[in-house]
Image (cartoon, rainbow, N blue to C red; front, side, top):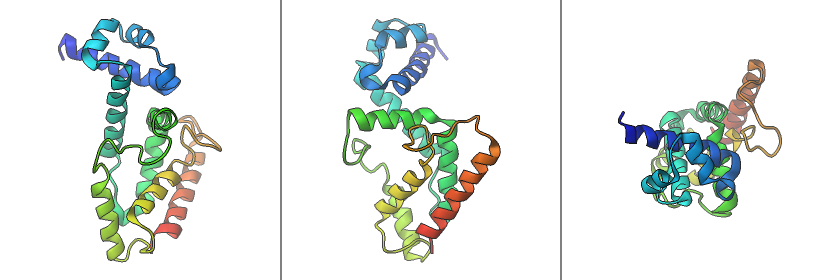
Length: 189
């Protein structure tokens, strides 16, 4: 990795931490640059401005989650559990999405800028509904939204109880079992 690429990577890592902690409005470019051992001019040259940098960070984290946790329409409980595990392992994704919801997109599709981002998932859910594996009386988008919300129950921005990676394994197992059982009963046939 060349010096420019290494600097870009340090900026992305520092920006992800800064945005996850402070949100878009609260993040400071000078703190990002200092943490990345870069200067603000480099940051602006690479990413334009703070808002554009946030967009890159959010897209990177969402894309990574999509790659790490592909939807398995024939195993919705397993998919929900894998999402839970991803949220435990990468709480910054939940925090970044929460800041985007709070500061940018209070209603509607949070990821509307990425047209078709969930097209494959929705098609897989619809196919599984036709095959009789998923309840047929819900729209595929609603099934997907419910899966994400259920998996997010204990995530970093939970309204009730936020999970931590250091929670005892038996607690994680209890949550995984509850999640899988709920998804099975609510969304599968």
